[in-house]
Length: 97
Length: 469
Image (tube, rainbow over all chains, first blue to last red; front, top):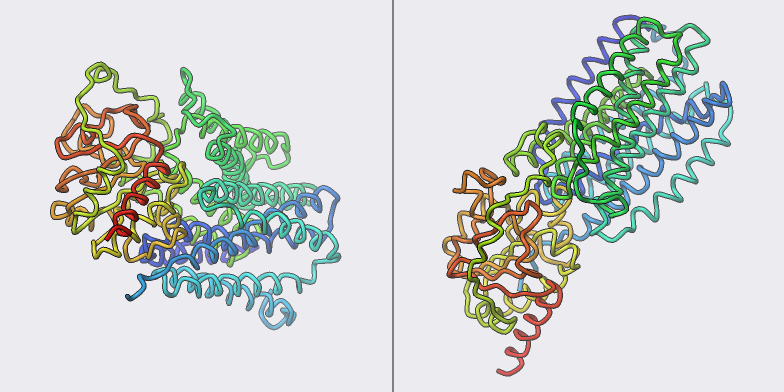
């Protein structure tokens, strides 16, 4: 890795954090519970790193670690998106009488 | 490597990551309103699918068996976890932070094990791995502890002992010190083991002294740590979509923690190291003040003669599973043309937004759910406030009693309404062990009993009345 890669990653981190602050501050307070389960599912994007470790099969140890990591991330993806959607379906506006 | 020699498949993978990052940001943006929020979930799923497909194309992958097995197992655990009752959402959330931390710690360990024999542990890589493993490890065990406390497998009361903070901070300091040493001597693998073990132990010890009412802040903090662990993983794997998603998760957790702390008028340090539940306000216990108590019938009379009602729900409502009864009261009263609103304190419940989700499940429309600051403006003109399972968040002592442990905490001004009905099991003080003068106020009617039972009786009284006309 050359040193410029490190700096470009630092830039991505900085910009994503600022975008995060802006976007999250606008999230409706009604939806803070679904927000947490949604960001949780999104950060389970860690699955992509785990997939490569489990799939490149360098040593038995790393394959095991990678496989467990894929399972843990996949649990978060599946349960996170499903429960967020389940909760959001419940938010209804007042019926007009 | 320059762009011209990069194989096409690598471009595809990177493009899928770019698309995923954009979709994740849109996903959170659409959460700004309930009417667009479900589109946000769709965008998140789309981004995730793109990134996974893009990764499966990766040329380094030689076998798919274990990936598929792990995905099936993950789906097998994930589907039932998404169907838990909504009162159990806080523990599910804590559990998912634990899985996030676990994945980070495992990937960090795997990368260390891969790079160690190849002599590829540069200063940067070793530092990033150490941060990833510390954050991942403490998030894993800390979140498991939090989930255990929320599920009441682990004792919910704060567990404290002498020198607790000194011991905790020393452990963390040793872990960080070992990490610094490991960066200088990456071949000393036993240091890596020390770091991993200490961070796991630290996570447990960090949560031991936390009481139930501090859970909203602690869950938010753990959310933030899980996000930062993903960021560290992104730096280790040089993966920008991971850095982006982790940063979004981390900033979300951080903002929620700040909101929770402000809503309790406390600092992070105070929540983590203050063992708030241990603070017992001793003196006041002896003097029993006269309270006015009444029956469900009396409460029903008061409610149906009001023209505006505000309901203040608290964790007690969730414990008693009384949200559906609350909705029935809402229906009975709105049918009579009475204006009914819900006053939501930010820390009511066990995680941010918990009350909103429970009431939405009970089919209370979301435009009746009003934030604390907004409802407080209306309360002096409100006829009746109905307090269901809330205690400290309506204690007027927070406004004026400087000796009270909750002094300075923003509260819902239930005492400023024309009348107040409070449903409570007994006169036992709440979580902080503080007397609540709201209960002995002249315009407060106490109805003693289990929240679900009392609310059911009120509904019956209201319905009977309607039938009689």
